[in-house]
Amino acid sequence: MADVYRALADPTRRRILDLLVQRDGVTLFEICSVLTEAGTESSRQAISQHLSVLEESGLVHATKVGRTKVHRADTEPLREITERWPVDRKETQS
Image (cartoon, rainbow, N blue to C red; front, side):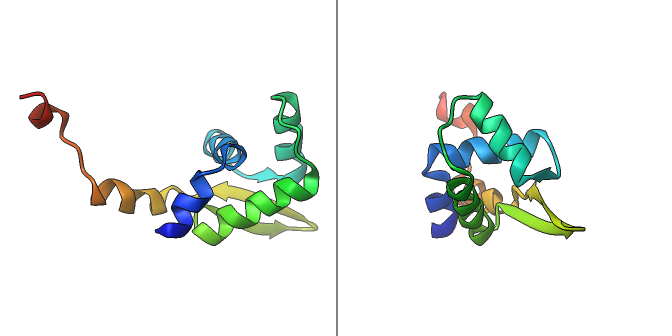
């Protein structure tokens, strides 16, 4: 679970994860393009390193399609966090 927290600690990695949740199957080139348009000034190498951290945490999976790597989000590791600290808003309002 520590890897998930580390992965989510960085705002660029959160943006990448947001993108992958919205658009399934995105290449590194597409991720770089979207982040550049959003004003993120990270190099292709830096974004690749961010993707590696996300992959190590299990939040992103990459598959090779031809000569291209396609990235997909996997939010399953987040389930462990929500199961550890479940919140029932109705009980906390009493």
